[in-house]
Length: 344
Image (tube, rainbow, N blue to C red; front, side, top):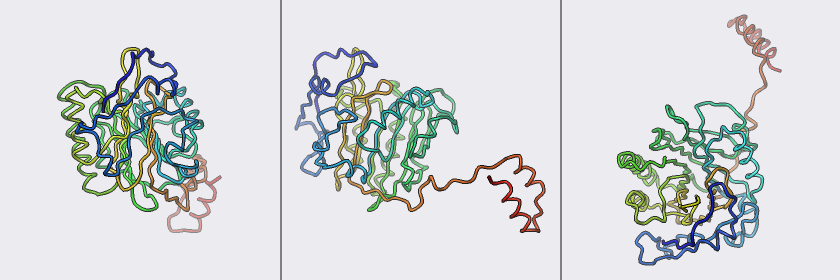
């Protein structure tokens, strides 16, 4: 896949217009390129255009209405460069409200959070938030917002935190017809050969485990490998690992544009061929990366009881302390009365 473009003249942080970008970047597919997926095998062609959040054309995806997105497994990926920053979180809320569909999962890279850190970011309406934070270094970290009616579990052996090397968070989502693995991976922009070798070793183990499950998987995140730089040996080593494990890309246009560069470093990869995966790049930015999205043809399975319903009465902790001190374990009647007292 080769990208031809005119001179890049955007400054970092400039609002990017989808129509302008579509005129600026032209994708040319080289059929002789061994890394180009075989379209005849059922792989959906990578879209060659940018989108606006509020005007994604369903016609482009042969989807007739927003309802078809609503009932399918969808996701967006964002490098936010501090979810703890309340201004960035407010921008995230506004962006979600502007979307013409409601993503099932929102992958966040560079959360800048610490373990169990409270804040407004925990209260995105309609979502449950989980994260994997750095242990000793500032910055980085990954998180997922998952729709609160979705059944999912964290996949512990794929969820890794090696600060500034390999930062990941994977879940298994119970869709109506089959389980789907979804994960986000963040890799720091480190050109060090040793760090790259360690990252690739982690990656090989992860995608090899996924392949053995024979389950569909979508990986979305800021990998900091520029997919359109075919002369980069690190990028080629990375893509070989992915292709060797039957993963193929769904993004091939620049996702981060500065005054001097245009790079495709925010990726979507999947091993899904039996169902359509539609994808694209939304030109809006929260930090200095554009936002990737995908919608795959997996029907969502909703819980009878949503996670919001699994809440408890607020507790008066002063009454709780007194009640616990006075509990007589051999008198169940008194215990039940004391529990009634501490609930509001």
